Image (cartoon, rainbow, N blue to C red; front, side, top):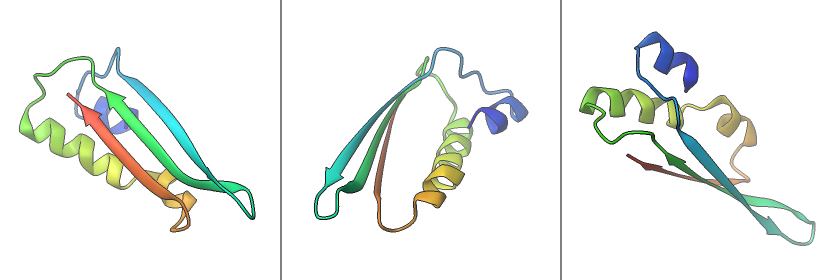
Length: 77
């Protein structure tokens, strides 16, 4: 997200991310990752929001986790 934001001159300074993992059993494993991203300001343009949300959907970490881990991402503008 940071690389693309920098490329498009989108200011993310002060953004915060909160990550929660949900564990499964037998075998013990992570079954869900819940991420809440709080943006530092609320006046992003529709174009900027679209860019940021596309990055979230194509996150290499999320793609690495595969289909076995449910991924929920909420962005608070």
